Image 1 (spheres, rainbow, N blue to C red):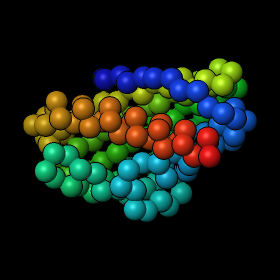
Image 2 (tube, helix red, strand yellow):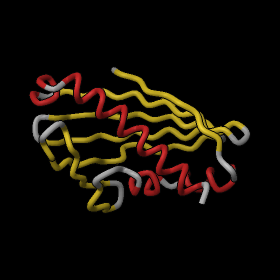
Image 3 (cartoon, rainbow, N blue to C red):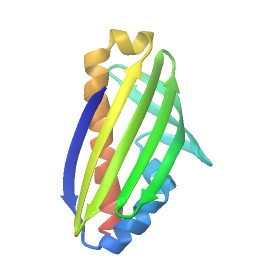
Image 4 (cartoon, rainbow, N blue to C red):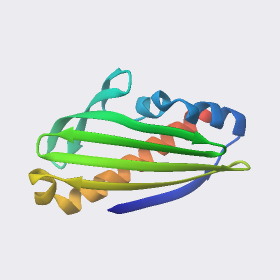
Length: 135
């Protein structure tokens, strides 16, 4: 399992709570998303010179006070992944950490590259979310 984490400041904490309370807002921020249907989504994701279509499902989205815990499972050709993200709202600061696990034949071949891509993907989702909150 690999972990990424960070923290950012937001202008309006109430807007942040409202934004993160609906997992669909996070899905809109996944780069390459082309379809959202309930808690399922499809996206085109670039891995090195490949673009692959993945299918994802939000398995868990729990709100407990100022903590939001979201688990997403992703499947694509040769790749199976799970991403568990915990967002903690403290004052005007959003702390987040994502734990992800990737397996499958393609994942094993491109392990280092996929790890870098997964970290970048987490950052892009958070940056997109924060830009929408701070609008």
